[in-house]
Amino acid sequence: MSSRRAELYHSLSVMLESGVPLVRALRLASGSARGRLGRAFLELAEAAGRGEALADAMTVHPEVFAPLEVLVVEVAETSGRLGESLERLSQYYAFRDRIRRTATSGLVLPVVLLHIAALAIPLPPFVLGQTDLGHFLLAVAATLAFLYVPAAVIFAVVYFTPKTGTPRHLLDAVTLKVPVLGSAVKQLALSRYARAFHMLYACGTVPVEVCARKAGEAAGNHVVRKWLEGAVDAARAGNPVSEGFSPVVPLAFRQMWLIGEESGSVEETTARLADNAADESELHFRRLAVWLPRLIYVLVSIYIITHIFRGFAAIYGGYQDVLDGM
Image (tube, rainbow, N blue to C red):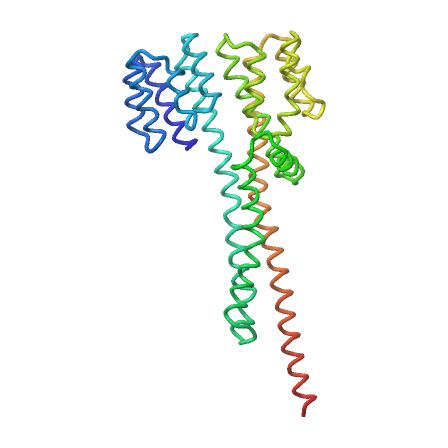
């Protein structure tokens, strides 16, 4: 979905910057999309043809358009920078899609190895007639449960609980403690925060307080969001946003943001911070993609070797019983 959304926003931006009328651009973009997203863009074109504001039409589809998208478009329509803002949205979703692909590709091999191990480990006793089919299938299911039970719990917490609830906070806190993965998620959240702030601030008419609040909602990780929420109070009091950041936020991130505020280059600085944090996050995700399969391979190998020795011990014990009986 993010990839298609990024392509649509990019196409819209190019057409608008080339002078294509909004209604026609929306119709052309909707023709290249499928499913719910394509239907939503077609309805946006119809609404724009009736003279409705694009942001107002987007609010009719809360299941398709996030509040951040609606706010960016609303401000862009007011400032007359719609094409430029749509390109920023395109870059935002393209980055999210790139990170998702990197993280997913790193999980493919470990999952395959775990399924192979689940079948290979109980296979020798079954082939030798030491267990029946029922015990074999039960052993396979027990091994796969180590993957699917935690995955089901995480899925339930992520998709069926409020984003600000205690279960989500605990999950996000635990995630940040996991080696490599925690660093990747932290940098990803910081990048999303800086990117969202940049998109809104660059429009020129959004109050800094609103930029900080909406950027916090876009951060994703609940714990990192807590680290940054003081920025809203700082902006409301007329102080630099960076003064509201928790000391837990990386020092380089805080200092660079402060320098941008002092030099009057917040727009450029937040864009650079978003890119830097994105690069760091992608680097950690790539490391995870390299080392996680190796770790799974070692654990599976140890598990298989253990069962092989147990099998030999059982065979040797049975052989000794025969000799003793003679």
